[in-house]
Amino acid sequence: MDPELYQRASEIVNDWDDVGCTEPITLAYKSFSDKSCYIDVYLPTKVTSESRIPILLYFHGGGMTVGNRRSWFPTWMLKRAIKAGCCFVSADYRLMPPASGHDILEDIHDLFRFLSEDLDTHLGTHCKADPTRIIVAGSSAGSFCAYMAALHANPKPIVVLSLYGMGGNVLIPQYLSVKTEPFFMGREILDIKTFRAYLHPFLPGNTHIADSRLAYDPETGIPSNPRMPLCRILLQDGIWLDYWTGDFDELDDKTGDIVSEGFSRRIRKALERDESRIHPRMIPSNNLHLFPQFNVTAQFPPSFLVHGELDSAVKKTESENMKALLDAVGVEAHLRIVPGQEHSFEYTADPDSKYQELFDEMFDFVSHILKDKGHVM
Image 1 (cartoon, rainbow, N blue to C red):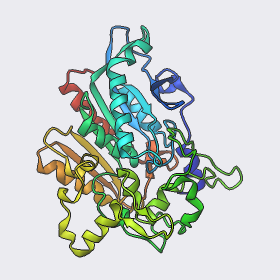
Image 2: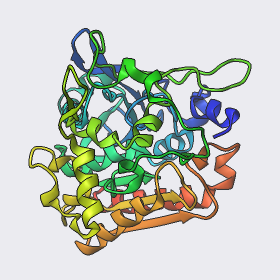
Image 3: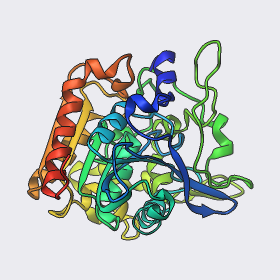
């Protein structure tokens, strides 16, 4: 991702009249320790106080390790959601580390509870949101959150939109192998010792956060927030799934020898013996619900998946596997592989012109589902 593209990934709308929505209303949907998780709520201006409108809930990317509700912000999605008569909600969630997938799923549960029980009290007389019609969307790690919401949230989303989504199949070398050569968008191999402040065993003061803004050197445009390469080091050392599950190698305090193996090391060894061993029984029961690939049923919402053909950060096989899983249980699902494109391809200049047909097709799909649910645009 070039510096200009990085900058566009953190730009946010400032011409609300052009979009047809209000300025965002920022609300805390939960508190933890002395911090909060926030959402930004964007409301269509052309609705009445009697309107009960669908919600499009968006989860940001960042490998689960960095970002906030205004990072990698999909302006094109906001515009189309507002045009479709939806309330657009962009959400924070706690970040790994020290949070785990268990904590992030808890945040998703709390967020859906807030949307269904508390959101309307903050909207005044402008309109009412309809929590029985939630479209859940995400990009990269945000798609993983969207999949988790589709599987576990109450009320259940009616549509899933995924952009180059993580979570379709995480028992692959991208997550499990130790890399010694550039593997992630051509970027250099990192020294894990420089990330000690963030890694397990956690040092005092390494507390939960839900907001790590994108930050850049003003001269070079290169990321300056030290958490921004954190996902890459976890993938590079094949330990991302340790942090997702909270299941780590345990070391002897004196010798540094491994006393008990963590999740990634155990799964890696099992797959080295026999790749055909990929099976739900490989996953401890307390973590099985964190793996969408083992939990897809016919109750999964209709889904539209998009992935760049040349994505080196999240392999396109993840979306291909999710599509196959949905097909196998009879869920309506569409997959579009974008030829020649890398990760975060829609943050190139003027994405509305380059990908208008793709974006419109995605929202034609949303409109089709909304009409089935009684929403007339």
